[in-house]
Image 1 (cartoon, rainbow, N blue to C red):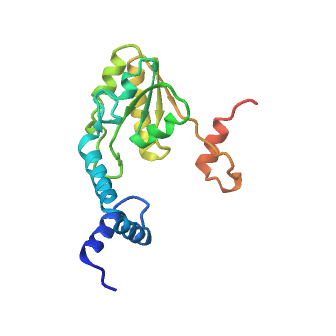
Image 2: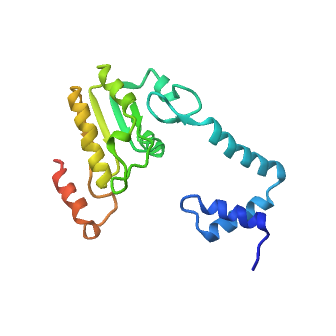
Image 3: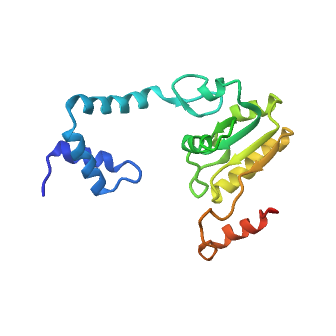
Length: 197
């Protein structure tokens, strides 16, 4: 069945969003068409505003609309711990844990299997923070895949060269997971990282 071209275009644009399949995109598009015009304009304006007014903080790389960001401005945060993450979404997740240190966000989809190079990353703000001498520990909160492993080792080397302890998030079995379904690497890391009860 042929759809109106603007509706088809809206569905195509929604399909570009992560985790949105064809049926969800169609449902969302039809829902947007049913919205009151003022609400539809507010949604469109919110997308435009976020796109135009949100940018990475010059100190930590977290997404913000002020520079430095609210996290960097917060004097109550622990200045001795710096958590390095790949994306702003990782910071949102880590904040839910109650972590109160500082951050550095890489904000780049790093893919070692592609043509990317570690030197392409802008690590100047990270190195400046280490050189300031207040940071005692760098927590590497990177994804547990090949790219994350290489990046963690690279950043750990930089931290150690500045006399800063480098740590990594613990790896292992998820709460509620079954051992029999764990892959070999996860199970090995769980055994290596075991703790006394």
